[in-house]
Length: 122
Image (cartoon, rainbow, N blue to C red; front, side, top):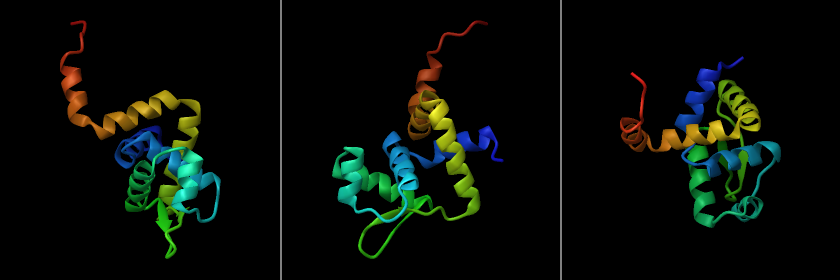
C-alpha cells in the first residue's frame, strides 16, 4: 500500500493543474484511446488546457499518445499505477486537500511568500 505521504508528494510533483488530474482520472475511468476533441468535450475545457494537461501526463509516464494522436491511460510502472489509485481515492474523499496540494506544487515561491505573512502564536 502506498503511504499518504508518498501520494501527497506524487500529487504535488505530477500535476500542474486540477485539469491534469481530471484528465488523468477521465482516461483511467474510460479505457481505450480518445481523440483530443473527445477529451475537450468530456472536460469542457479549451484545446490549450487539454493539450498542456495531456503533454504533462505523457511526460510523467501516466498516459500515452498513439500514432493517430489519441490518448490513453497507461502508467509506466506498477508503482505509478498504485500512486494513481491512491490519488483517485484521496481526491474522492478530500478534493479540497488534493487541490491545495496541486496549487502548492505548482507555485512554491508564491506559497513561501504567503507563509511569511501567516500569523502564528509564539
